[in-house]
Amino acid sequence: MLDGVIDLVRQLLHLEPLIRSVGPQVGYTVLFMIVFVETALFIGFFLPGDSLLLTAGLLASQRFFEIELLIPLLCVAAITGDATGYWIGRRAGAPLFAREDSRFFKRKHLMRAKAFYDRHGGKAIILSRYMAVVRAFAPTIAGAVGMPWGRFTMFNIVGGIGWVLSMTLLGYTVGSAIPNVDAIFLGITGTIIVISLLPAIIHFWQDWRGRE
Image (cartoon, rainbow, N blue to C red; front, side, top):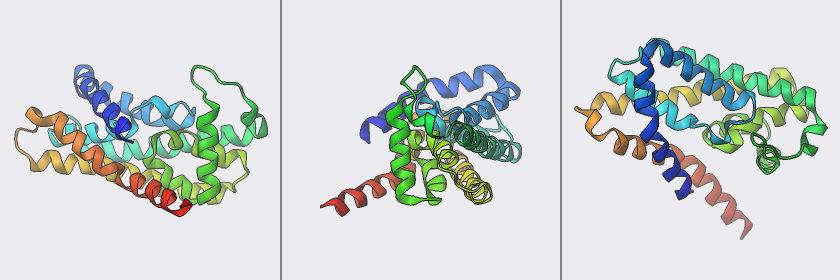
């Protein structure tokens, strides 16, 4: 878990200057595509979803992005990304679980997501939003095991909107509350990431205690 936090903080060394360098107009497109692809093509285990939303929120607090446009745009990206992942799983079905590892596909991540889905059912679509590896595969698993489309859509919308709002507004609120946020940008975002990971930490701790 600590290694994951460290990796996310390291990613931020490149995220903020990269987004600034392309400008806000291109930045909206880049953010949309990353959030969409993260779950649509089950390759999100290496994409910086949480840290990206936090960074976008911090940049919006500095008026680099318009928060009124940013949030709806990213909600659409998150929801349509999961929906695409669901239909990939629905069409691929059982053969997906026999697929060999490749550069962008790791079967162990798929099985980890399936175990999480088996344990939590439909709630996994919401909970997985806050768990990078599971987030990338959860909608595909839901499609592969035949979860009804209407039920999936309900969880998808709630999870997508909740994830985008919580991560983006957390970054925006902290950035708005602290003057000269540029000087301590990395430290603030690292702290926010640790806070955002607390639900996952608590979940794994409860699971561990339950096995004792």
